[in-house]
Structures are given as C-alpha cells and as structure tokens.
Image (tube, rainbow, N blue to C red; front, side):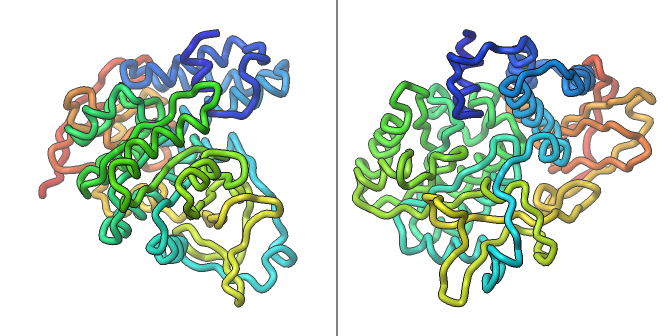
Length: 388
C-alpha cells in the first residue's frame, strides 16, 4: 500500500488500513490532496469527485473513505458547507430529554476559565471541518497571558518543525492538513503570539504512547512549569484509552479535554449563537454523551455568513467580491489569494461553482488574486485594493 495513503488512512479513520481493499478512487483522491498545492485544476478535480459520489457500486468501507477524502478536499478549497453535508457523523440527541436543565454558554469563555487552572489543554477536530481550527486559534489568543506557550499539532510534519518555528508560516511541506487556509492561519497566529510549535505524531504501531513521549520530551521535560495546548484529531482526547490518558498518567495531571465531533451532525433549534457553545447545568456540570471519556462537548450552531462565506472564516478580515469577467465565463472557476512567498499556503482558496451567486474571498494587504479555469490555466492575476 502507498505509504502516504496509509498515513492518511490512519489520520482519517480507526479502520484497519491493512485490511481494506482500496477502491482506486481512494488513491486518486489522496493524490488530489497531495497535489493541491502544485496543481490548480481544482474545477476539473471537483467534477471528477462529483461523478465518483454518484457511483452506486461502492462497498461501505470504500464509500466512507471516499466521502472523508472528498469532504476534506472540498474544505481545502472553501466549500465548507459541501464538506459538512457530505460527511456527517456524531450523536443525535433530543434537546427535550438529553439537554433538559442544561443552558448554552459561550464555549470560548467557558474553556478559557477552566484552562487557566490546568497545565494541559487538548482540543480535537474532524479533519474535514476547518471551523474546528478556529476554536483553537481563538483559545491561543486568550491563553497566552495565562502562561500557555506550546502548541502541539498532530498535523505538523516532523521534518518541518524547525523551519516553521523559525519562519512562522506553513508550506506544502508542513503537513497535509496545514494546507487548509484556516489551519495555516492557526499556525501563523500561534507564531505571532510567540508559541513554540511541536510536532509529535509518528504514525507508528504504538502511536499514542510515542506521541505522548514526544510531547513530553519537547515541552514538560524542558520546562516543568510549561502549559501546553494539543490540537489533535477525533478520539485522541479520550482520557481512558488514547493520547490524553497516557499524558495524564505520565505527567500525573488532569488534562482539560474538549471534543468538537460528538455533536457534529446534531441540530438544536433553540441555540442562537454564531460561535460554538457548551451546555452546562445549574449544578455546574457540562453535558457530554453517555460513556464518553472527555470533559466537554462543544456544539457548533448553524453558521451565519459574512460576504456569503461562513462568519467564523471571514470575521475580522477584509473581503473582495469576485468579478464574473475574471473567469471568462468558464465554471467552475478557481481562485487563490496570497503572497506566493516560499511556497506558503494561500490565505484563501475558493472554487466558484455558480456565477449566479455572488462570490467573495478574504484578502490582506499585499495579497494577489489568482484566477484559474477548471483545467488550471491562469486566467487573471490581480493585486488587491486593500491597504493597511
């Protein structure tokens, strides 16, 4: 099995990768993710993905993997709603029964208050949901003054740890998931705030143990008073079986573990926040699914929009409306925004599917806008009108 495919399978799922007979499209889509930084034929790839999704002769494992990979690709090119709709999971709950006597509170405020008293904060994500990275990015800002100074990232490639700490931004060599603009922004914000980034995941047989040892050796072993944030995927925050449990045992501490995946597919009509929330009872107990092994479950309400993009993504950023003429009336039309410095990750990516819907990208001072047809041919390069 292709080594990169195996590593991605480990990151995406708990299935036994060696037992899976890979559908050819799993390998093809994996290559699309790897090539995204170099190849600009995003519209062409999107159309192929659509045809794969309607294929009827897929076994359950192949369908699950294909949906995860394609959803991740969609999220990388700004199609966040497509990604969430394509691959959903999580616990459906009855608000009347399971949340009776629980009240929604702002997740950032609650987590920040609790994290002040801890040395280790662990936040998970679903790899195809970039908004989960927003929560960690905002926590970095609030917790720097509380003594937190290390950010350990499952997604960070070990080979790029030294460079990224020195230069302060992600490139195509930093890791697959760091190619997402929201993840790249998380890295940039962390470095601007003065955090030391830590790579820890080696994908070995005893992955959880080795990951824990790497985190400890690069943080607490160097500074016994360190405060560390770990941003990881899915079940690694499990305090009974996974990475969190090993760190707790080896360090003799109680980590604060935050889950963003348990309620991924849940819709609670009466919650009217644009930012994530947690549910707390009058007895100061936080809601969590039955038989879970983490501290708090975060719920993301239905998102409002800014400039026709998710509010969490566009908040505090300037936006630029795209001109239909730039695309020469050929759709899908792919747009990147960035400075194109040293193979850095674009500040924004957006695949414009429908010219009838106004499209916007987020921009910074000094950025350029690159417009491509579906085959990857550069149609237009423009400087943004944003000034400091």
